[in-house]
Length: 162
Ligand SMILES: [Zn+2]
Image (cartoon, rainbow, N blue to C red; front, side):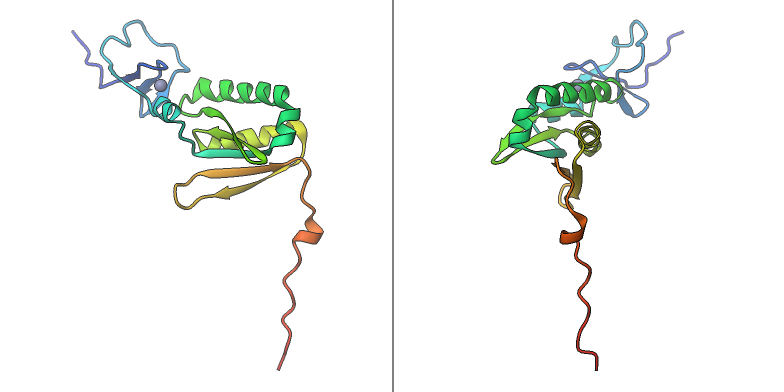
C-alpha cells in the first residue's frame, strides 16, 4: 500500500520542510521525506535574497562600532536559536544609516528579540515603533535610558476656566 504524501514542500536553499502549515527544520526528517516534495524557495530565503526586512533594530553607530565583536556574537546567537525552530525568522544583516546601524531581520518578532537581548546584555532601553503601512517593527535602542521626568511632561493644565 502506498501512502500519499500530502503535498509537502521543501526549500531547496535551506532544506526547510513545509509541514503542518509551517516551515520547519527542527525535527528529524524520515528517510525519503524529500522524495516527493515540491521544491521551492521558502519565504525566509526569498526575503533573505531580496534583503527584505520586516524588523529593524536601530543602534547608535558609534556604540555598535565599539561593541562590534560582542554584538555580532550576540546576533549570531539569537539568529541561530531562532533559525533552529523558525527558519523564517532570520537576521538579514547590518546596514549603516548615517549615525546609526540598523540590524535588519525578516520578522518583527526577531527584531523584538534582538532588542531584548541587547537590553539584557548592555542595559539601556529600546522603544518600539510599528509601521501601519507594512506592519514592520522598528526598535530604537539607546544605551542610556531616556529620562522620564523631563521628556514626559504631564499634560498641561487647561487654563481659562469660565
Ligand atoms: Zn529556505
